Amino acid sequence: MTTLFSEERAASHDREIVGPILSLDLGTRRVGAAVSDPTLIAITRIEAIIRSNWKQLLLDVSELIRRFDAKTMVIGFPLNLDGNEGDAASAARAVAVKFARSLNLPVYLQDERLTSREAEERLRADGYSSKEIAAHVDSESAAVILRDFLVDGQHRILIQRPLE
Image 1 (cartoon, one colour):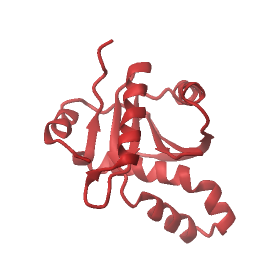
Image 2 (cartoon, helix red, strand yellow):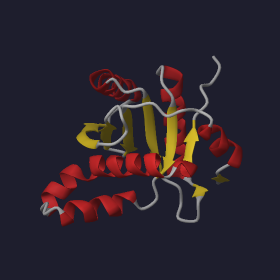
Image 3 (tube, one colour):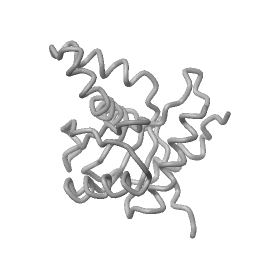
Image 4 (tube, one colour):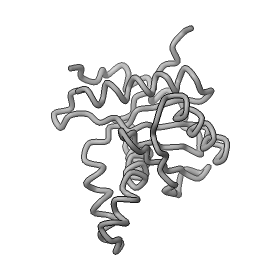
């Protein structure tokens, strides 16, 4: 288990955030997605991606980047409640590194503790049925992750592009 390093967090503050930003909530079966407008004010939930293999995920995400002209990507980082990095966070970090290596835009990780619960509560408050909540919760979680990224920059980590 690894904890977050302050130098990673500090390095993320040195770079200006440019929108639109594509946000992803990585699930094992679906990947929730949301996007900001270029001014970083509005956040729109978009249809979740069905997750199969890395190549297809890269193609699907590349298409979203093209479609929304995204300039930055943020990926939910599922830390344990105590702030430590468990297996799910390590897997998210590995995917983020692959995206950083494959795409020509900055890739960040954003602490996503309890975002799924908040997303469900928001959808329930908006009057969605249980079936509708299940269909939208992944992308609503991506929207919450993006909101947190924009509002609370101290919990973001810039993934350094690995040298080939």
